[in-house]
Image 1 (cartoon, one colour):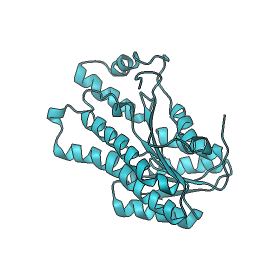
Image 2 (cartoon, rainbow, N blue to C red):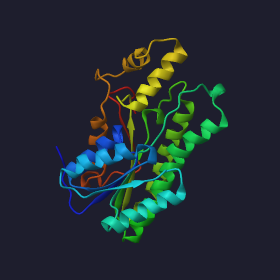
Image 3 (tube, rainbow, N blue to C red):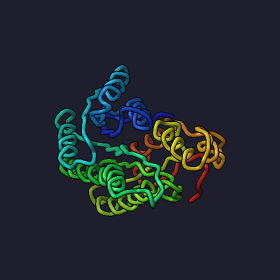
Image 4 (cartoon, one colour):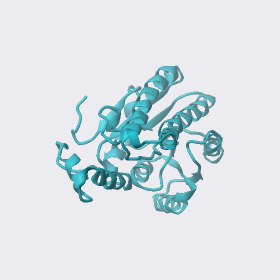
Amino acid sequence: MVTTVSSSTALVTGAGRGIGKAIAARLAADGHDLVLNDVSQNADLLETTAEEIRTSGRKVTTALADVSDAAQVKEMVAKTATDHGRLNVMVANAGIARVTSLLETDVEEWDQVMAVNLRGVFLCYTEAARQMIAQGGGGKIIGAASIVAYRPFALLSHYSASKWGVRGLTQGAAMEWAKHGITVNAYCPGIVGTAMWDLIDQKLAAEEGMQRGEALKKYSESIHLGRVSVPEDVAKLVSYLASPDSDYMTGQSIMIDGGIQFS
């Protein structure tokens, strides 16, 4: 069931494909106008997403930016306020995965994962909060965590650490900004059929001496609902977190994994 909203603008990072694209489409269906973000390398994908959503009648603008760059995030949020009048929902979805054993992970790779997955969420959270407070308070801030924020996977230790960080950041932000009427929550997908999990499957298979597809199959055996997730599964949860129905929820990192991990 779609929960409709009125006079709301949502900013979604990493919206060119995968989970971000599905979130954008769902929020548009819910009645939000949108600012869609991705990095410049995904400009064509981002514009395709924007054009598809514009057919629904929602106002959609795009903002190319690297979420790990403080100046670019600040400019992106300012552009949202200028073009749409206000920011009601921030979805800090952008993220990257690297599959490497800890002993083979160099400092550059560690820093890259942390820069996008943790610093990027920190920058999006804080710039969104500043804008929402300047507007008079109220708003929804939503971040991308992961099942590995609760249960790390081998060869994904740095990725797991970054998502544990998002979980802690979400709780701290929720505590600090509740007085402004801002809720802060995160979503924790499990195994999702996206380009990111294609890469994870390829790397895990190589590390474990499997054929491509076998690693994904192995890890998927722990899904109690019996199927790999699709991006729309995650988008439905984000829809709830962005809606008035979740007004009494904050500081939560909610798993949407088909029953792999129970809290």
